[in-house]
Length: 376
Image 1 (cartoon, rainbow, N blue to C red):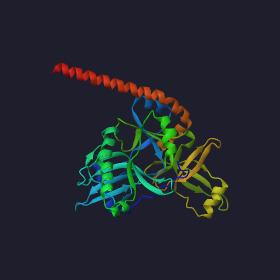
Image 2 (tube, rainbow, N blue to C red):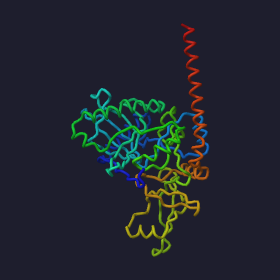
Image 3 (cartoon, rainbow, N blue to C red):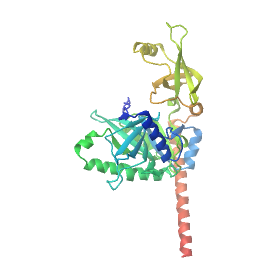
Image 4 (cartoon, one colour):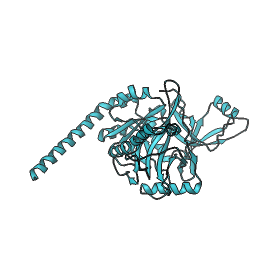
């Protein structure tokens, strides 16, 4: 896995505001809600109680890529042309004219199809940088709203009706079309929730892009269009981070200011949370490069030695910091966090519970078959 991640830029062209607003409303209509907000699911932080959750329900697990979260939206224009858009966390649409996605018949273009995923930059062994779109969920397929379906069904549709036809298209298309594609497309690899040893020992070390944790998603639950309690984000407690809005308070312009972190209360409301620790070297670096700081969203992590929050990186891809309710959960997960060894230790009991459910399901199916045979 590369030591330093290269975060890809979102390809495409921005839209005029009126066109963007129309599409924002249309995409919400496709999944059956009113409004024009970003509809991507957001995970909750992993806590000790999450281990019991993994024992009680079947979850799929994927590495948490260091990339850019985007939704991919296909829509047919009135003239029959397909248009493909990428949507970032700020709900900004980028039109990507090179992309085309067909249904399995290879003739019909996808319309009102919404795919959830992330853009990553893979570093190949020869040093070449390859941008990939890793798709991990599907909210709508050709106008059919899928959010009430379990993840297993959504992933099946994603593979068979979206990614596989695209790969067939790439194999048979003209070279200039293939070369024009802004990224490669694949379904993100997932493991069963108890495959933790394999994930830590084989999957993560062989990645060609950065990764900073794991995402567990219930295989049986519906898609949630906001914070999803059935989507768990695990990081080692010391690596848990929070996003805040940064403001500077100068006592004297010749001195280093106070770096104030504000947590989001919803709307445009923010309230003071804490100060950010910035050492003199970082402050001098920011000053010398004239780095804009005021009102930027910053990602910080907790330093137990200093009992405070340290700068990790800027998050210009986010319109707001984390909501105060999320901040509370992250702080709780730092205090009540689960270390890697503890998670690994739980994998046997997670597997046993999964197998017990599987056995029970098989018995129920056999019983139903016997009852049906008796009726006949």
